[in-house]
Length: 100
Image (cartoon, rainbow, N blue to C red; front, side, top):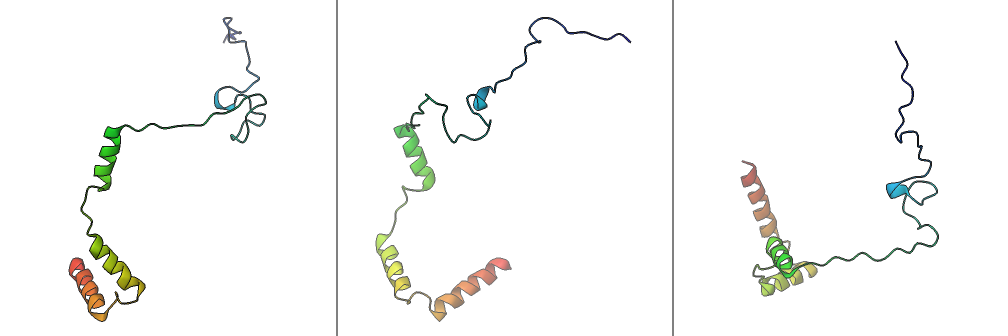
């Protein structure tokens, strides 16, 4: 069989420096520091009003919140009055019903 030699046309160049994400890094890993003389800027994100409205709908922000009920339950929990034997029995019954 014949041996194939080097094919001219640019493939004889060897890269000795990192490229892409590793360019300018001495260890080729991480993003701990920028090379000397390079300052990094701040990233920003602009969200349109349409995107905000869509996100609010998906998150359920449009749902009516019964603040009076929320406040009452929070107060009962803080005062130790929320967990009663009747409520615990009701929760157990609901769990057993969902399993059957």
